[in-house]
Amino acid sequence: MLARNSNLKPSVAPSVQKAICYPSIPVVSGTLALFLFVTGCSIPRPDPRSEITEMAPADGWTAGGEAGDVANDWITSFDDPVLDKLVSEAQKANPDLAQVAASFSAAIARARQANSALFPRVDLGAEAKQTRYFELTDEQKQLGLNKNQTSLGVSLDLSWELDVWGRVSDSAKGAALAAQATAADYAFARQSLSAQVAKGWFQAITAKRQLELANEFVKNFEESYRLADVRFKAGDVSAQDSFTAQADLAGARSNAEDALFAARAAIRSLEVLLGRYPADELTVAGTLERTLPPIPAGLPSSVLERRPDLIAAERRVSSAFRLASAASVARLPRFSLGSAYQTSDDNFSDLFDAPGMLANLGINLFQPLFDAGLLKSRFEEAEANQAAAVAAYRSTALTAFEEVEDTLALEKSLIKQVANLALAAESFEKARSIGELRYREGETDLTSYLVVQRQALQAQADLITARGELLTNRVDLHLALGGNFETGPINETPAPPPLPSQESDSSK
Image 1 (cartoon, rainbow, N blue to C red):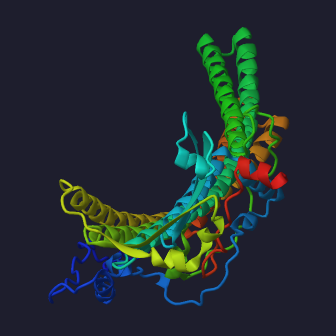
Image 2: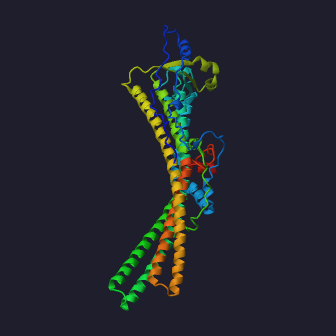
Image 3: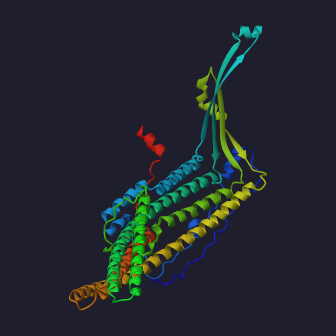
């Protein structure tokens, strides 16, 4: 049991600093001079990492450890080739994972949209117009005009917002950080799916073994009822003994039906995770007796830093700070470069005349004056989102520590349970063998032997349950640690698979 962590420091996200550099000198004459002046002002920005709660590791965690690439291969530690294939199949066909992957692709697209605001925008326009004159004047006739005149025009517009206060860059970086958070969500979804498949596989094996034992119980109670019925007819026992044996048999058959349904339901649940139709057609084979790698005596606290859900929460904190910073300066003046150039059909070559474009280049100023509190409300919303992101990170970090603590403690308990239940099952099996031998030699009756056999079957059922729980808890431990027992981050987050439209485009 790890010692309680007494170094958790609560954190409350403060408001983004509103200190803005305002000019204290008279207004400088000329737009260009004003631009040169305001570009010298800087907006102080808080460090989001300083606002994230610092989680000091409890006793039992070791500090340090060199970071390195850690393969996310904890599934192979169970030494089950069938499980490896099932996990690979689920990663390719699970619809829920495909949904998260699509969200990842959408987040990347949103980040690119926000980043495009950092670059100039160039728009090309074209116009065709036909003018019909019902009667031409003498002057128009001298100019060579006819009644149907067609004119073509082309325009080229350039606009570029100057990121004086960092609003555009903060918005772009906030969107990029949000995309990184979604990438971490995708990595966590992949890990969670692997864990669900592993747990589903072990539960299916457990259910199958319990079904086999349930059928053995039925055979035992059938023999007990047969013996009770024969002795009742011979007058050796009362009708109560016969009815009791019959009731026990009916209960055993009912339990066998429950075990059969549980086994089939476990298979169907696993098939859904694999992206298959739940047809109860998956063949379950294998044993729950596994030699699991030992847990290192001192797990480094840095292993939690690689948890995708913790990474996602940290990226959302940074994103919230960037977006709040952008909202805080949205009420300041905006400066943009603009140029518009038009030409007609007789001088298209002038459209790309650089001197002409520069001659039309100007700086535009946009200053919000009254918006009924719109921009202020947007900043307050961004500030609230910032506080929520910090609180969410702290909650995620605390949950991560809790999950590791719980799974480590449960592993120790389950190991002891498995050892004790294995001893009990072995002892009951020896007692059953002795009882069978004594019954064959006539030293004891069949009823006594069947009771011992029933106890041996129950001990095996308890042992199977405990072994299944030990395996599923080890899966939960790997999920809580974000990978295997090695130090360092997991491998680079895989890119989302292409969407169906992208696949069709690439095939062309």
